[in-house]
Amino acid sequence: MTTYLIKRLLLAVPVLLLTALLVFSALHLAGGDPVMLLVPANAPASVREAVRAKFGFDKPLPVQFVTYMSRVLSGDLGRSLLSRRLVSELILEKLPVTAELGAAALSLAYLTAVPLGTIAAFKRDTFFDWFTMVLALIGVSMAGFWLGLILIFIFSVHLKLLPPTGHGSLEHLILPTLALGLPRIGRIARITRSSLLEVIDMDYIRTARSKGLTERIVVFKHALRNALIPIISLLGLDLGYIIGGSVVIEHVFARPGLGDMTLRAIYSRDFPVLQGCMFVLAFAIILGNIFADISYVIVDPRIRH
Image (tube, rainbow, N blue to C red; front, side):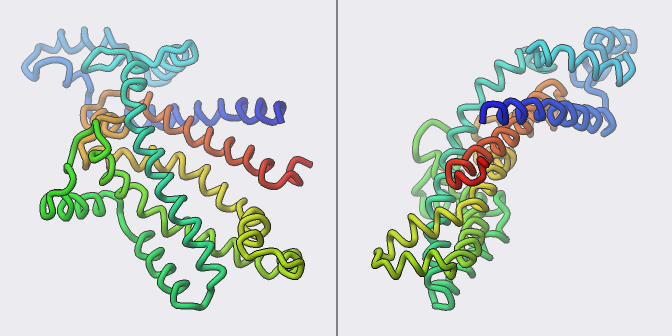
């Protein structure tokens, strides 16, 4: 397992390099000059050229990319073009807010969807199964930002039960957690149901029932554990989805997290900040997949061999 983890971490290096190259290329090919954000509009050309040379924007793009990556490999993500603060400091400052929202949204999604999918599978072709799958389809079809606005309108504007924006208390966390977590419940429930339907008719399930085991033991110890592989795979991907989805959700609810900082960096063309945020997103997806691979072995030891 240790050798496997080392190999996976080494394979993550080219993925991060490719991510950095794609983000770097997209930023510079999208048009616009970040220097115009750093100097007044009526500044003379000589001043703009001096600023461009100071930040290295006058060099060819391949040279800029190599220079940037050499700094990243040494642990320096650069400084924000606007605030002049270290990008690593900004990320460490904003990351706990995003991690709090992500943990709450993932917990809501999986603690709700897995039981729903499990019950739907063992009560297939009943009203509960039909009703659950309809709700799942509605959840999959909902956009997070639209749901966030609807939640603000209902619970903040109309009912005045919860604050619409901000950060700092449990009340501020409820609405963004619902907006980010509810759309995932449908997909997770459908995959849980489908995965369980593949195993509940197998011989070992019938054998477990014939031994007189209670239905709870049959479901959770035998059926669900053997149906967990697709669910774990989805969890690994959801770690990246949560951080990516927080870009819009945090902006809708004015939460000062990594997602909101990413969107503001896009608006202001703050290249170092945006590149640093993309590194965190790519790294989260890689860690999510490694976590999923480790969980496979825990759930099904046969995979180890």
